[in-house]
Length: 485
Image 1 (tube, rainbow, N blue to C red):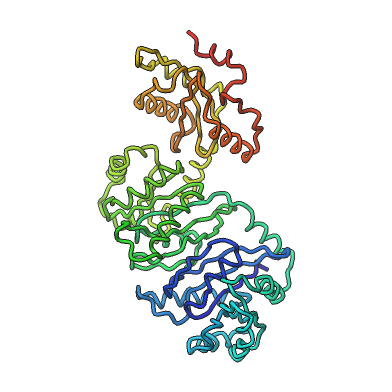
Image 2 (cartoon, helix red, strand yellow):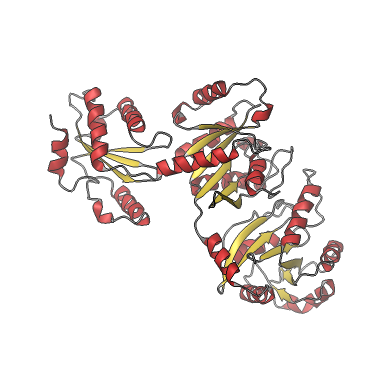
C-alpha cells in the first residue's frame, strides 16, 4: 500500500490553496484573490499522529482559464481525484450552495471514495448553524473551518485521519522514505516556454504538470519526487520568468519570488535555454541569481531535436561569451520531449554536487597556493609587499577558502581571480563556484563569518573546535613556516 493521498477539490475561490497552506503550516500553494491561480497539482507530505498522507491541492472545478488551459487544468483535477484515497470537498460558508458547488457534487457523487465536506470561511460560530444546508451535497462528515480565524484545524485533521484507509507497515516505511532528505534537489529554472515542465514530466514518467505552448503555464513551484538508479531525487519546477516590467499581476510577481527561493533551497540549479532562441535579459537575470547564491549550476540547452545543423561547440562558445563569469559551468544538450540525454544530465548534476561537498586537506590546499605564488608572486602595492601566510577551507556547499595574509587590501582583483583559477584547475572544484576570502594577520576576522563557518561545520557533523579564531592553523608559527623562503 502506498502513502494515502488526500485531494482538496472544489469550485474556484473557496480557499483550497489557503487550506493547503494552513494545514501544512507553510506557504506551499500560491494564494491570490484572482480565480484560477492553481493550475497544476501541488502536493505536500503530511505527518500527523504517526500517520503519513500526501495533501494534494487542485485547480478550481469549472474555471474558465484566461490562458485557454481549462481542458489541461481539468485533466490535472481528474488525475488528482482518481489517485486520491480521500477527498476534501471545500465550499464557501458565506456564499451558500452555488450552481458550481452542485456541479462538483454531481462529479464526486459517482466516486466510491470517502469524502469530507469542508465549509471554509466560517469566521464566526454563527455561520456554523447555517452550514447544515451543505449536507445535501454529499452524505459524509462535515467540518466548519476558518483559515483566516484559525478555527477547527485540529478537528479537520482528526476527521481526516479517521477517514483514511487503515495503515500498514509498507505505508509507514514509504512515508519515512519520502520524509527523508533526497539524494539531490534540482531547481529547474529558465524563462517561459523553454521546456521545464516537459522535463519534469519526463523525470516523473507521468503528466505531473501541465505542458502547453502558451507561455507562463506554471505558476507554482512544484516539488516532484522521482527515482533513478535506486536513488531518490526532488525536481523543483519553477514558474517561467519574464522581464520585471512585463509582470502582468501579483501572481506572476510571486512566481518570480518563488523561482528565486527555489534556487536558494536547491543543491544544483539547472538553467534551461531554448536552442532556437537567443539569450535574453531574463536569462541573464536568472543566471545572476544563481551566481549570487553561489549555487552549482548546469546550463541546459533544450529542444536540441529542433536545432538542425547547429553545433554544440558554437552554443557553448555563445554561452561562455554571454556569461564570462560562469565559464566553469558545464553545458548539457538534451531533448526533454523524447528523454534524450536526460539521465546523463542527472548523473552530471550528481557529479558537480559531489564537487561542491568536497573538503580539501589543509596541507594539499597550501601546496597548491604555494606553487601559485611561486609561479606569479603578488605584485607590490602602496610600497608594501603582499604576503600569504596560509590557506584553509572552512566550509563546503560552496567550497569556502580563507587565505590569511599580512594585509588583505594589498591583493587586487586580478590576483584574486588568478588564485581562483589555479584552485579551480588544481583542486577538485572544476565545475562549481568557490568562495575566496582574504583575512589580514593584524586584524580580527569578521566574527559573524567565523560563527557562520562553525555553524556550517556543526551541520556537516564536524567538530567546530577545529576552527580557530584565525580560521586556520592552531599553531600559526607552523603556518608562517609553510611559506617562508
